[in-house]
Every structure is written in C-alpha cells, then in structure tokens.
Image 1 (tube, one colour):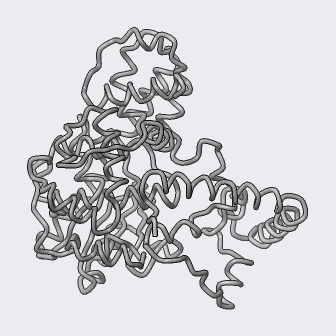
Image 2: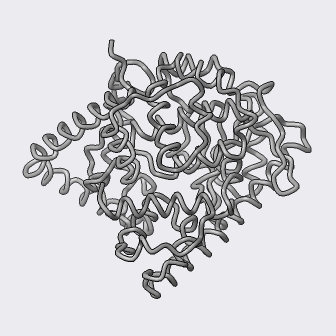
Image 3: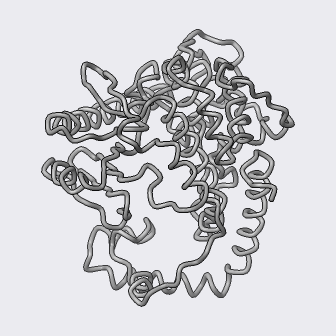
Length: 412
C-alpha cells in the first residue's frame, strides 16, 4: 500500500471515530493527493475536522477544504429540508413510503450534513406513484426522461440543485435470479418498514436488518458495474454503530447465503473491522480466511473507485458485460429498434457528454455537435478502436479476476 493511500485511510478512520487530535504520523503526507482522493470519494467535508488540526496541512489548501465543507453543508441542508417537506405531505395524506439510503444512513455520521448524497431516494407502491409524482412536480421538480426507467422516476429541481429518485422497486429495473432471491427477503414490503425520528421529523424507512441487506446489494451493484468508493465502508461502519442493536444478524447472513454474497460480505465487513475499527459482532459466526493480499486489493479498489488507471471517461466502459454478475444471468444484448438507432446518431442535448457542452447550452448548435460527434467516431474507428478494445479486454479480465477473488462469481 502506498503512503498516500495509508494516510488517506487513517484520516478517514480518525474522522468517523471523531478523533480530531494532531497526529505526528502525517508530517510527510501529500495533502494535495489526499484531498484528491477525498474528493473522488465524496468525503472532503467529512475529513475536514481531522485534517485542519494537522500542522503540515498547507494554509491555502486548508482554506479550500474549509470552503468545500461549508458548501457541502449548505447543499445538503437545503436538500434535507426539501425532502422533509415532501415526506411530511406523504405522511399527512397517509401515503406509505420508505425513504432509504442517504437521509437515514447520514444520521450515523458525526455531522449528517457533511455526507454528500447525490439524490434522495423514496420507495412507494406502484399504485401510489402517480399521486406522489404530482406532489414532487408541484414543488418545482421536473421529470428527467433520459434517466427515468420503468421503476425509477428521476426528478430534478434546478433552483435547489436537488434530485429525487422515486422508486417502485429498490432494485430498479434489474432482473435475474439473484434479484428474484433478494425480493423474497421482503425489503420492499410495507409491513417491514419502521418510523424513525430525524430532527423531530417522523420518516418512514426500511427496518435496519433490511436496510443492511439492501446496502450490501447496493455496494455490490456499484462495485461490479462502475466501481465503489471508500464512503461505502464508512456508511456501513457508522450504520452498524448506530443501528447495530436493532439488526438481526442471523437473518442478514441467511440472505447473504441465499443470494451468493456471503464471501464478499465477509471480505467487505472484515475490512470494516480491521481498517476502520467496526465492532466484529456483525460477522456473527463467520470467520474470514481470505488471503490478506486479496483484502488489501479490495480496499485499494475502493480507494480509487475501481478506476486507479483513470479510464472511466473512455467510451468502452464494461458495465454491460459485468451486469450478469449482479443479476445472476448471462448478459444478452438487446436488439436495437430504429428509434434507438436514430436516437444514438442524433442525440438530444441532454444525452450529449461535456465535450459538446456548446450544444447543450445553445440548442441551435445541435447539428454541429452531431457532425462533430460523427467525425470523432470516424477518427476513433480508424486510429484508436483496436487499442481501446484491447485495453477494454484487459480491464474486463482484471475486473472479473477481482470479482472471483472476493467471492462475487459463482464457481459453477
């Protein structure tokens, strides 16, 4: 493990344990690189109260870090207030729901508003979805048709820069054997939900055991499809610290066994215990005999969110090929319709990436962006395709190898 990686992990551990003391072991720390890792993992604000007390932190970086923390706090408070306002109306209208992930998980943190959440997730019954959509839209949120799926409706409020994801399934649109098994756990059932009090507000959510089961699925999803960050470890450590007495670990491990997550969960939770000081009661009759080198490889993969080589911006991402390991069935390419082909060749502004920002801002430039995009595709086909495909194959092979080592590929 590199020094900067070790320093970053140690600072993270100190932050979630509220150890804000000055520590001489950080005298040689590369603070710019630590900041970059913290930013990539969305924990800049979480680390600030630790790093501000380290004497070698440059003053100019300290000011940048402090400003980032302040902006995070304001951003998250604004989102929390907007979410609570909506949930109060759902309560008043006696619409059952479950607010899951962000708002509940953040309560385990020393300062909940330092935990960045990209969106707010709400689960409702499919029959209640249209009514809840109207309540969301009357608050100035607009449906994003490009990100909306059959079971996840994505709304964006530009004024407060807030996204609400309205789910009719916590498993989104994924289908397969493992998803079918997880659904049997009852995570989505209304009678599995509880009321919790957050800042004098009553919020409906998943019960702690179901929430932990779901979080492992969510971690596995990110880890397999796009890479997962260190904050998943801090989420679990602090979730167990806050709700651990309410979790039925026997039920938790039963569902890990049923959906084939046991070895991965053992490895992940061992990292939580060994590197972040979590109580080992969560392992409940489970011993981890994995090679320490594999445990470290898993941890480092999370440090860099599965992208240590900085390849995520490339067009040859491997999510489609990896999905089979998440859902438990071979990936089958869908036959493209004429509409899909036209949409690919002539995308609307919201579908363009940042390279064509001029057309995203000024829609009359859209035809120029289509031509620009076409020329880039031709150049890629002529000069870069073979090289990119080779790199993609190597990355896919390495990713599958890591999945196998941490227990996410069935031996059969």
